[in-house]
Amino acid sequence: MNTNDAASRLEALGNPTRLSLYRMLVKAGHAGLSVGECQQRLDIAQSTLSFHLKALIHAGLVTQERQSRTLICRANYDVMNALVGFLVDECCVDERCRTAASDVA
Image 1 (cartoon, one colour):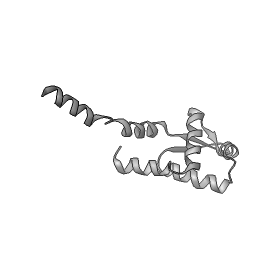
Image 2: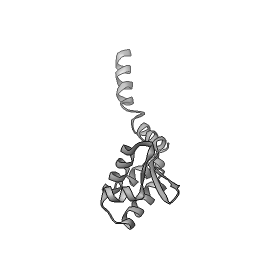
Image 3: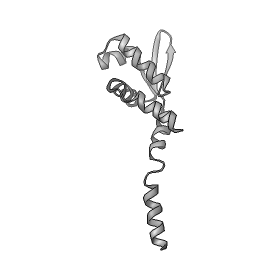
Image 4: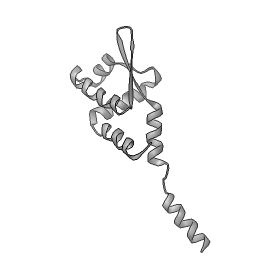
């Protein structure tokens, strides 16, 4: 993942409604939730839900699949894990380099 991709995904999660929706889908697991269930749990208008889902889908954080007449939303765990990995991959690298350098000196 590059910085631009990470920034786009974090921007999508920067809205309280989208963050709540995304966390709800993460909690739901691989089975996901129907659009109707998402709407009911968040207690928001269908148009508002559609707006926020579109942003999460565009960022690659959520996928949708039609099952008969039901639209199922799922968190994209691969993208979620890549984003978290991007954020922590270099955690404390500079500190470790300074410590290693001082140990050598």
